[in-house]
Each structure stands twice: as structure tokens, then as C-alpha cells.
Image: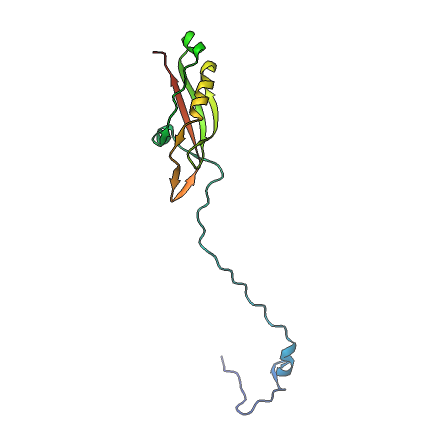
Length: 144
């Protein structure tokens, strides 16, 4: 490929630079748009919208306040015992935010809900960020 022929002496500013383009007509050419540069900052991990599921054993290790359920008198009289299975959502501050019964004798359910709703856990923290967790909770009623 050959080098372009460039003039060696003074340049006529009215002479075309490219075919059909002269320095005099350069001020009528729209400038190229400047590229848009956006700065990105490293984002922190965002907590999930839904609570993290954990096992009962994992969450029981974090229990810092446990209220023992009162045995319902009718359940005691009729010698009803058993396990009430609950599913709790533990808020970022360690308090029970939501609690529902999954299984258990109807005479024992209210006592289990009343007691567990007062439980407090150590918050679940991952990489310095507190998360809500969903954990199964079993409340065992035994007549002694």
C-alpha cells in the first residue's frame, strides 16, 4: 500500500481535504457525539426478598429467649400429648414475625403459638448483613 501524496509546501485552506470536504466547510459538519461514560460502583449483595430456609437444629442453637408453653388444662385432663409443628419467620432482629401451624393436636396448638411467638433468636447474619429466616419449630407436649 502506498503512502498518500501530501503537499510539501504551504496548504491552501480552501483546498479540499477529502473529495467534497474543505476546511471552510468543516464548521458545518456536526461533531461526533461524545461517548457516555457511566461509573459503576461495586454493589453490595442485596438480601433475598424471601426468607432463607434453615433447619430447626440451626435455629435452635440461636435461641436466646424461650417461653415454655402452658399445658392447656383440657388437654391435660384428657391426657392429650404430642408435637405441634410450626413454621416461623424470624425477622432480622431475631423476633418471630410470622408463625403458622403445620400439624398438631388442636387442643395444643394455641398454647404452642402463644409461647413461641414470644421467643427471641440471635439474628442470622451472613457477610455482615442480617437476613430473615424461615425455620420449622417443634413444640413437644408431654404429660408427666
